[in-house]
Image (spheres, rainbow, N blue to C red):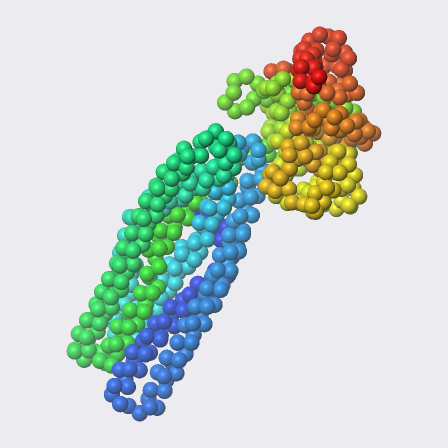
Length: 582
């Protein structure tokens, strides 16, 4: 926890000036409150003796000044403190995302998407109280305590010791109570709140499946059970807050009475002017405004540290692939050579890839086929530097990709994956991710090549039509064709297609392969697929099975071999004949 607190202080350090200004404004606000009550008490006490109005002018002006300044300082303190809080939150969000992005996808597979979202949203929002309730209140309390010691010394030596002693005792009692009550409650609240939000996110995302299988009621019961746990923790937190408020009122009034009793004794002994009794009592009462937020600071600190620990668990994770300290410049050519490539997933004894080798010259076409689990998707992940391989090498333009910056490697590939992701934006905005400066005619040409231009133009707003979250306003085939258009628009040297036609009808699939055939003069093509369609024109076909290359050759050569490729091809054609309408 100490390490988490230090890390939070490091994150807050760039905003130290604004935080210092906000703390000074908070001190000025409390000081104005003390000055207002003390000056008012003195004015009333002095006026009771019927002095000349001239003798009360300073006190009258003081009351006006402190009354106005208290409101002004409070407004400025709120303005500055909330401004720095929002800036700090923005800084933390960027810091967290910058640490999160290199972990995708390898290191993030062990986390649920709802849990990651809860960390990025809920846990970061929890840290909004770090300055307002954790850092600023203790600083103001210390300054006010020292100031009250000097204030008391102006009347009597004993009061100079008594006033800060009462404040320290009150702060210690309230803070100790808050710590003992909330040391476990705060982390529990953060954990259960995260679990509840994760459960709600999963339930919303899977609402269609829950309804289809009649599991909505069971899922609702799980949510209600978790919500009941969270509600119990909230009640405990509310009870703790109410108890702290009651103790705060009790100790505040008790402290005022202690100061008043001591001041009365000093006045009876002739060591203190009785005119100052009300001034001392009300000044002491006002000074407790500085220490009353400390219990809340303790509770917020436990929640902040728990949230920070959850964020640091992600931030401190090491990426599966790390860029070299001094990467080589991007290559000038983009041939692809893979030699004796081997890779194991964590926790698996058998290799996902075992000695895979192939070459893809510039502007050539290579297909990698095989049954499910053969290692095709693993090969894609290694080529894109999402995972790091244990043996062998991948060379891009003659340069080992481990010597290149990961972003430079990925820029060489225009990718269409089998799990296409579209952002909750317009068609145009999703396309412009590939090339932000693309012209209108280039967008339309990419859509035409992907056989989706007519569909997009038929939408209510054309290219400016929103596609919905995950592109759910579109069919699976439409999403796949938009992803293909985005990859074509990128004009990367190598077009990497991972099951690009999985959701397309046979006619559209054939037209898209004809389009890819025309692209041979500009780009290399690496096709990952289990559908043996349109492979007759490919320069080379690689057949994977259980992570190994079992066959290699052209379409005609592989059919003549009568091996795995031949069996897959005949099986698919038998299925096609069975499903073809009469």
